[in-house]
Image (cartoon, rainbow, N blue to C red; front, side, top):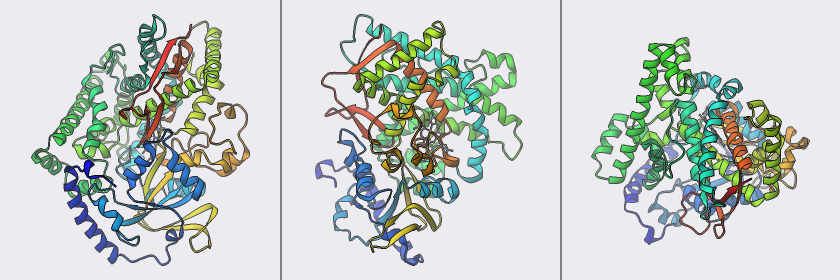
Length: 579
Ligand code: HEM
């Protein structure tokens, strides 16, 4: 519920819209044939008065932002029905008067049951597409298949190996800059490591994705306009409440891009115009890079080699492969640009996740999480440093090759354990496009006391897949599942994990999802983490900044902030040279 102090007139427009929309929905629901005895109704679960807002506020004030998921796991297990009401500013005030059978309420099928996840994410993937607002590649069916096919080779291990020199080069720049900051002993003021991780992640995806450098990694604040825009865009969209999952897809369905742009220009609303300008800049910038690459490709090898990426960046490879692709696999020019900035108009920006969004926030927050955990576990930090220093000594101080780096067992264990216990994306959403019978690995008891082995999920139901609860399930991971223990990866995992048949692409974890929509960049992200974290831990010592306890805020991607501070994402840590 919002207090009157928080009342925001911007919400009024939304409230009118939601009232009209709800009336339409109510009529629609009345006219829809009800599935007889839908078993989803029988699944126990708590009401959530306001989906996103309730979800966020229940988690963000807490020192560890995952307690909502933990509460569901402890009280209900892996299969839960959440009864939600639309999150719409002023209308929220009315939700207390809404009876539980109202059409304004809808059930969300929340699950971390392996069989259910297999069904939804693999077997019936096309019947359960992502909510458009969540999709990183904003396509489905044949179009999505085409994009994945074209992109797969640039995320292969062979390609990762070829990118090692570029990754090492960026790590070196970061090392030089941090060394300057701490050369006179431990930096007195703490250093915001989240800021540096975000800049590093953008530079890595910029160079390997676009063949373009955004940041010299030296200045206190990045100077390139793109770096600033990408940082400001999320909060700017947040100010407009554009994360409203109900209305965005509807508006996009109703109006063409041209009409939406026209409406946006016509609305006398400064915040909207700010977002418009950011999006237009990002789009024009992507087109400019695309044009430069096309010209170089047309001019021939010499021109390609003169570019920063020397034709090895993802965009160049994609463009070259596309020229040679058969008609059925060819991507349109717009589709290629869209991989890097699908932002022709502002409504699409939020909906169409691009590589930069997908790659940057996830990995920078993941690296920040590792660093923070290392400050809380100095023994693990020392052990890691020993392992890395030993490996460096063995290769006479040279950079480790791809194979040498990925073979370091303790570094690998720390990364895996962090991705298990603290997945940057805690849950993902799908929508049932048709009525579906979802099987369960373990029966649950329904509200009527009967055992349920499969759930009838009606068309239109939102499905919430809990990555975090799957990764922390004590049935599979054992009684210490809630503890951060890198050592668990140094010996063989319990048989219960393999038997569970969890559909994740990575180490029986759901962190990078599974199936045809799993994270295409997961090997890229692991390499990035290992190159950067190994350099940082070898060269520097990290400890908590006094008086700055860190909490993790759970929105789409969990990010650190100072407990009791202004809520801005940051990770202040004390840094000193390791030698
Ligand atoms: C720790 C880092 C990362 C995590 C935890 C992560 C997690 C995920 C998850 C959970 C999904 C599935 C979303 C859904 O199905 O709703 C996904 C999809 C995706 N990720 Fe990542 N990701 C990471 C890094 C990256 C990187 C570095 C890249 C690119 C270089 C990337 C590119 C993508 C793309 C393009 C998709 C959409 C795939 C599709 O729809 O076919 N991710 N990621």
